[in-house]
Structure formats: C-alpha cells, structure tokens
Image 1 (cartoon, rainbow, N blue to C red):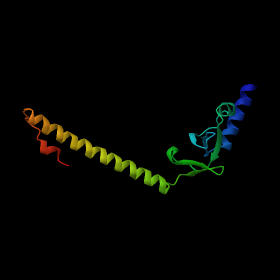
Image 2 (spheres, rainbow, N blue to C red; image 1 turned 45 degrees about the horizontal axis):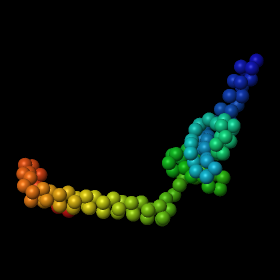
Image 3 (cartoon, rainbow, N blue to C red; image 1 turned 60 degrees about the vertical axis):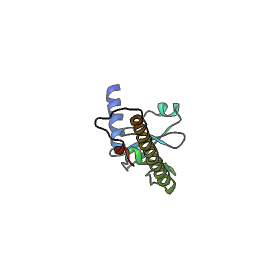
Image 4 (cartoon, rainbow, N blue to C red; image 1 turned 90 degrees about the horizontal axis):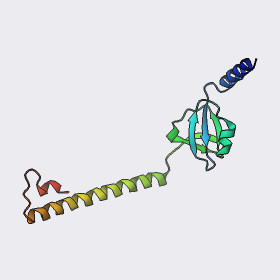
Length: 125
C-alpha cells in the first residue's frame, strides 16, 4: 500500500511538472542550479535557497532571477565595457611579454649566446 501511494505521488509530481524546468536560486538571487525535478524543500531551506518553476528552458549560464521569474540575461553596457577592458588588458600584457622576450633575446646575443633557429627579430611587435 505504501509503495502504491509513493508511486502515485511520484506520478502526480511528474505530471504537474512535465516539461517544466526548476531553477534553484540562492539567497543572493543568483541562479545556482537547474533541474527537471522538484528538489527537496528541506535541502533548499538548509541553504536559504528557493526553487522557481519555469516553462522556459534557458541555458544555466544565461538564466537570471528577476522579479520572481527566471529570464534570459541580457548583457549590460557595463558588462560589455568590462569585457572589452579585460581584452585590452590581456593584449597589453601580451605586448609587454613580447617586448620583454625581444629584450632578453638581444641581451643573450650580446652575452655571446649563439642562436641556431630563433632570431631576435622574431619577437618584433
């Protein structure tokens, strides 16, 4: 009898959430998980998390919790600018490293190091 009741409740749960996606949201309102089943409420509350059911199947990296709903995140101007700044910094650091390699190569040649394959001009910017 208990097995029948358990299976019946499991079937009802599956039918109620068929096709729905459950997103787990932290107390900081950040989507921290995604599943296709109803998570344990006690487990969620132990971490101060909530479950949000949605018809939308949004990639985990793009899911955002706003106004009680899960939406697809749209990159803000500030995020775009920060990304561009990171790329510019990486390009500057690569240029510095390249110049440093050229200086080191020329210093090695002055000290009498014989290069067989590499030329210091290979490190031109």
